[in-house]
Image (cartoon, rainbow, N blue to C red):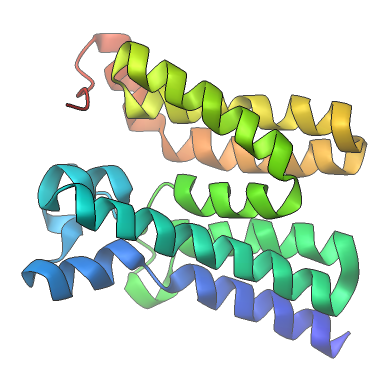
Length: 192
């Protein structure tokens, strides 16, 4: 029980390692949350600091998702791996170390999903990329991609994974509330 608790705590703390905040500080001596959309995530880094910084942010945030799932699997098997995957995203979205002001969790969700079920994750990513290419809306592509995750996991892994995917999709959509409002108003920014 102690090891499982430690795994969950480590997963939350891993989520608190905000690649965008740390990278923006070293890259340009800024707090990314004070620029662009104010979000501590890959898209805002891309718009503010460029593609190289955005790729590093994406990789860093995805890797902490991978590592959290690995820790959960190592210390408690599949069910703890799923829990740690959820917790690392919570840590990313609401990091205590950064005043509970984090990102929207998509990159970390990608890392988690790729580790839990690579095939399903890649299908979701591919669909999201196609939507991004067609519409140029990162938020719309992200939400549609993540919304497919629970259904695909249900067909491939069963009900426990479906609930896991539902939690991940729910968190992502919740974090995109302002984007949804802008999409409905037609004021959402497109990516170039």
